[in-house]
Image (cartoon, rainbow, N blue to C red; front, side, top):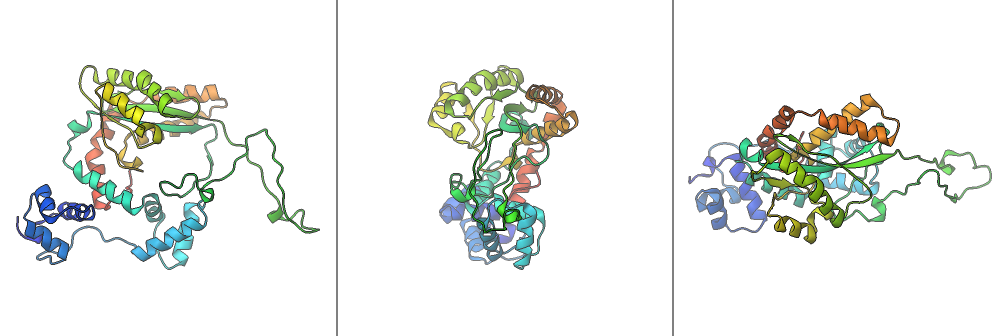
Length: 347
């Protein structure tokens, strides 16, 4: 393979990604199985033959920077507000594009794309060996379940990314600076919020079905997560794989990536799948959580015990056929990430 025109769109994407990671042209050519001159011609822009492949991005880097500035002014804006302000700045686009642009930063998109290209040739049989896991929050109220904040990795504790909350029935005295006669003005009033009761749930699934659910009490740290692994993940693996080997998947939450957690997996001889940050569109268990939440809207539980019972019933109703279809979608998810150049996808 000697001409740039012979390179596929995927190979070109891999070349660009590896170049950004600091790889030499020789290393890149050996990695993707083409000549060094083909890599050189692609990087220098001297392509021949056919036109550039792939869908053209609907926004520019300048437009993306404008969106980031809009987000940074108020991290608690709705998607509609962000789109309106972005449109007013001269960027005409859809809500879906706004959503994709604010979720992943450039570094995360590159890792997203690199991960997808590495897994591009995995078969459904290989994905069937993966035990996918995740945590999800379920609320008694199915309307507004809290404010969304747009932030980057490492900004979790920044004041501008935090919103104070009040736990009912506690009361809080709030000072307001006003003039005489302004007592009833809307800008001088502060509404109170009663937050809905909720439960956090851990679950796992594979192509063969779902494992037992774990209702989590309190915050998840490394110690409590190891308890979940011991008492719920291992039984899930036993149920779904028996004595067969499997690969475990979880995201990059602090409790998951802790050194003590890594040692637990090493001691138990369990292989963990490397996973890109902020990639819910790649995890098929997210679709199962969505199925359960849709069913809960019909059940309308009125107490926490009813909520837990409804969650367990909905989870138990998920069939192996549904799980297998979701696992079979993994190659399509990978291709979608590559086509989107690392941006989040419809999944």
